[in-house]
Length: 237
Image (cartoon, rainbow, N blue to C red; front, side):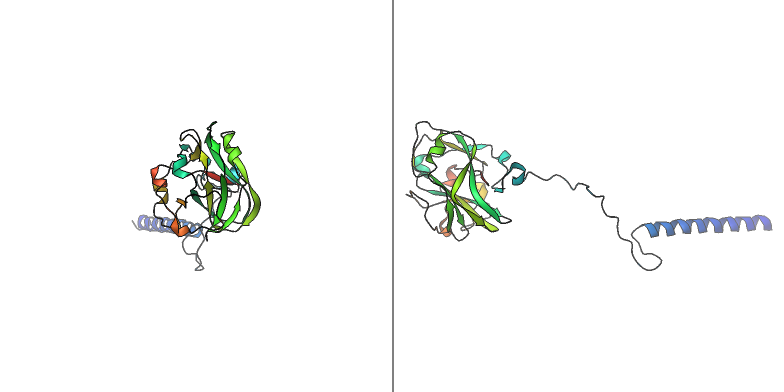
């Protein structure tokens, strides 16, 4: 009996020792405290491991910035000459890094071959309402090739990070549903949570035949926007 009891005790001690060694090994390899009191760091993720889907960036399409992915600009927006003629339409864009701004890309969706256009411009206002640059009269370019096209600024400028507004001015006569622009489809909802002078999409002034040197962004209006003049798509290069 004594031999049997001794064997059982020894077997129990061996099992306990083995379990202790296993636990010690797990602690040393994991995140818990080591015997010297330090803590092991969690293993670093493998190099090149993905963190999930990232959406398209302007640089993927040889652009510097945009108001949104052009793939989402599937809507076509139109307004009558009486509705937007002479008004300055603004679309806000926020730059995260400094760029040299040379062109504004506009998505022209449809043409009116009988339109009579004059004094049509694109330009850029900064957050203070100062005109930083503008194109020459783009009227002839609104009569050809209904595609996304770069419209050059008369003089490129260095744009520091910050808020800017792409300005569109149309003048003349055209058929409402013939001269059309690519847009996001967002009209009223685009300004959710915003008030002047920070509206993402708005109009200013009436009776303009050129882009004024300064505008008062506190006067941003949504009255025309709310009639269905959806937010145009623009790119920058």
